[in-house]
Image (cartoon, rainbow, N blue to C red):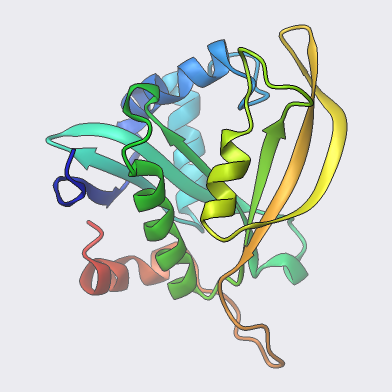
Length: 200
C-alpha cells in the first residue's frame, strides 16, 4: 500500500458505522481498550460529535475504505489543562504494519499544533506479561513517535478475567512560555488546516 494513496480527512458522524467496524474487534478480542461492550452506532456518532466540538477527529482513507482513525480528547476538564490532550489511534487490525498509524498521528499532531496544543498524552493498556489479548506494541509505537513514559498504574484494569496495568506517555509538541496563548477550538482552525495541510 503506497502512502500517497492514503488520504487523511476529517471524520463526520456519518462515518460512525465504518469506524465502529474498526473499533469493535478491539473491544471484543483485545484488552487494548478497557471497554467491555461495543457501543451502538448512535452512541459512537455522539462520541464523534462530542470530540469535534473542540478537537480533531481524523480518518485515513484509501479508495473510499476507512483504514483507521485518530482523535484527541480532553486531558482534564480544569482550564489549566487546556494545553494538554489525550490521544487515541485505532487502525484496522487487517491493515497493521503499513504506516497508517504513523500517518494518522502525524496529521493529528499537525492539527493540534495549529490549535496551540502543547502536550499530547496517551493512556495505554499494558501487560505484566504479554498474552493473547494484549502486547506491548502500543508503547513501542508511541516511543517511536517521540513519546516518553511518565507513569504506570498497576493492575488497575480488569478484562477477560485478567488484571492489566495502564501507563501514561507524553509528547511535548510546542514551547511552554509565559503569556501562553489559549488554544483555539477545532472549529476555528478547520478551514485553515484544509488550506495549509490539505486535510479534507
